[in-house]
Structure formats: C-alpha cells, structure tokens
Length: 394
Ligand SMILES: *[C@@H]1O[C@H](CO)[C@@H](O)[C@H](O)[C@H]1NC(C)=O
Ligand SMILES: *[C@@H]1O[C@H](CO)[C@@H](O)[C@H](O)[C@H]1NC(C)=O
Ligand SMILES: *[C@@H]1O[C@H](CO)[C@@H](O)[C@H](O)[C@H]1NC(C)=O
Image 1: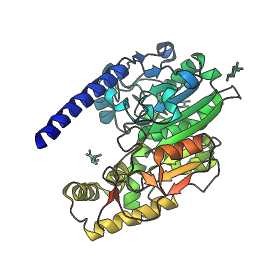
Image 2 (image 1 turned 60 degrees about the horizontal axis):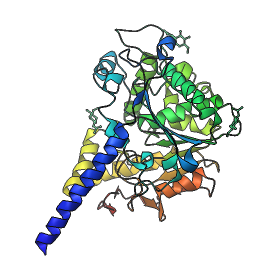
Image 3 (image 1 turned 45 degrees about the vertical axis):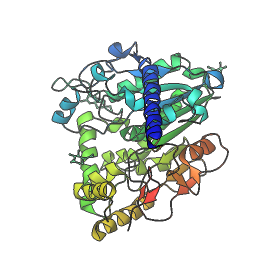
Image 4 (image 1 turned 90 degrees about the vertical axis):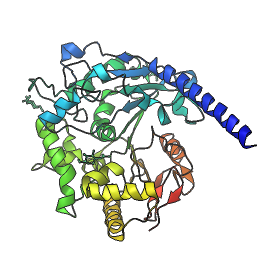
C-alpha cells in the first residue's frame, strides 16, 4: 500500500512539474515589450536601459477588458542603493526575464483552478518596476549615471497602451502589490484621467501597499518616514504626488507616499487588501527583532514571547485606526495572516484566506462587479498562518 501511494505521489509530482513547466513556458513566451517612444521621451530605468512591460492578449468575453498589474520591489533612497539595483531587474530591463516566474500565479494566472475569476481572460499588462520610486521620479539630468525617471516610464507605457486598445476598453482594473500597491494609490486618479473614453469602467486595487505611518511612536514612525523622505528627495517626486495630499502636507510632502494620506481624497473607487501583520511593515516599523521572533514562532511552532505579541497587537490597533473612513464605493479585505501580498502569491484563493467565510477572490469580484459592498475586516487579534489555516498560540 505504502509503495503504491509513494508511486502515485511520484507520478503526481512529475505531473505537477510538467504542468508547471508548461505554464512557465506559456508565460515566458510573453515577451517583454519596450515602448516605442521610450528613448525619445527619456523614459529610462535606473541604469539607462529602456523600461518594459509584458502583454498577454485577452480572449473570449475578456477581450475588451484590461487588468494592469504594477510590479513591486521596495524603493531605493540613496545613490548606493539605486546603483545596486542596476545589477538586477529592479533597476535594469537587461535582467527582467530572470524573475518572470513571479508573475505565474493568482489573479494573473489563466488556469481556472488557480484563478476562478473573470480576470483570467482579460488582457493582462505587467508593468515592470525599474525606477525605485513607485513611478514618481522626475529628475532632468542623470546623477552618477543613474536615471530617476519613474514618471516618464509611467507616462510612456500608459500612452502606448491607450493606442493599443486601452482607449476602447470596457473595463479597466489597475492593480499592484507591495511597492506596486503604493504605485497604484499614487497613480490611480492620474491614470483615470488618461482614460478619455467615458464609457470605460475603471477601478483600482492596492495589495500589500497600505503601509502606515505609525505615528503613535516616533521610533516606529521613523522607518518608513525617513525612507520616503529620502526617496522623494532623491527622485524629485514631490510634483508627482497627489496634489490633494501635498496641499495638506506643505511642510512634509513626502508623507504623501503613505496611502493613508491619499486614499481619503481619491475619486476613483479603490480596494485595499492589507495585512495588519504584514511581514514587510513589521520588519521596517517594529524592527527585525520582532520580525525574526514572529518568523521563528511560525517556523518552529513555538510560543511568541508575550511582550512581542503585545507590540504586535498594539500595532494592529494603530493599523486599523489608519484605515480610510468607510466609503461605499471602496472595498476592503483585511485579515490577520502573517505574510506579504496576496493576489499573485500562494495565499490567493485558499481556505485560510477567508473572512466571514468569504475568500479573497470572491470579495474582489463582488466589489469590482458591483454585486455587493465589501468591507471585510477580521475582528479578532490573533495572528494567522494562512497556508495552514491555523492561528498562532497567544
Ligand atoms: C523636479 O521636478 C519639477 C517638476 O515637478 C521640475 O520642474 C524640476 O525641473 C525637477 N528638478 C530637477 C532637478 O530635475
Ligand atoms: C469608447 O469605447 C467603445 C468600446 O467600449 C468604443 O466603441 C468607442 O469607439 C470608444 N470611444 C472613443 C471616443 O474612443
Ligand atoms: C529586514 O530589514 C533588514 C534591515 O533593513 C534587512 O536587511 C532585511 O533584508 C529585512 N528582511 C526582510 C525579510 O525584508
């Protein structure tokens, strides 16, 4: 019996490998597209190479609809950091095929088993991220051979897409994860204005990008605040940040990199997917010690020290306070998983990723297609292992 099972599972893994390979091939066949006007417009990655995007044509009932996905990957806030990015896909299109496997899953997948949503048949655009500023950089002259041109990259890609059919689209959904989730918040209304066709329906979704300004504690506030300050100064981003926010934050316009100061005044409907126990935010805001302790307790199934648990619980309350006031046109899905981003990872569409019995993909569809209002926030403060569908002992 055991042998048979083993035999079966070997065949099963072989089959899975073959399927993954097939899928990988299918994705790898989506070439990189370099926008035609990039050079003329001076739209360049940090290293001076052209920016790029992937495009997969929609089919069947999805052919007039577009899902645009803005890639994540943190920010660079010093010359040295931006320089080190020129050695990989985060700063150079020369390396962009190396991490293509990251775009296989979740909402970007065509496999109905992985992605049961309508979006799988839509035109898909993956806007690659190689400027380090969430597409806000705007510096005229190169500095130390580095180009800070995030704004031009955004403009040149969106203009090319408009010519390629986006202007006749029925539905457009702008999404992004991590730093790409911040890019969505910062660029959503601007993108909406570019869609001159008034019959087009347009909504945005930010996943794993709603990092908060933890201002209750100056030490905690420091992490993201000082990074955003340096990003905005190095990339000359102020002019690209939403004016509704910079008008309020005259003294500290860089605070407008925090979605919480932008979302309130947005006119486009937006869906916020974020984990109060987001791994990236915990590492930056609460420090590596807290982050490593939490990771260890997950990995080794040991109890989290009580003081650390308390810091995390307090942070969660601060996070909930920083969510935007409820607006019927907006949506939210806030659960207690420990992780980072959902729509294009293994936590997409799994049983552990439910709130009130509603799974993430269902929540997003209900909201995007106006079937019902979605404002789902997990009420308890326990930390969840979503892939195992269990809670950490408190
Ligand atoms: C910074 O951006 C503004 C527009 O927001 C522009 O007028 C100015 O020339 C830029 N500065 C540099 C140094 O490129
Ligand atoms: C707007 O989009 C529709 C398709 O949804 C298309 O038929 C029409 O030509 C577009 N209008 C303009 C002005 O581009
Ligand atoms: C946590 O932060 C430290 C210091 O900034 C960094 O070196 C490390 O890579 C981060 N870890 C993760 C998993 O993000």
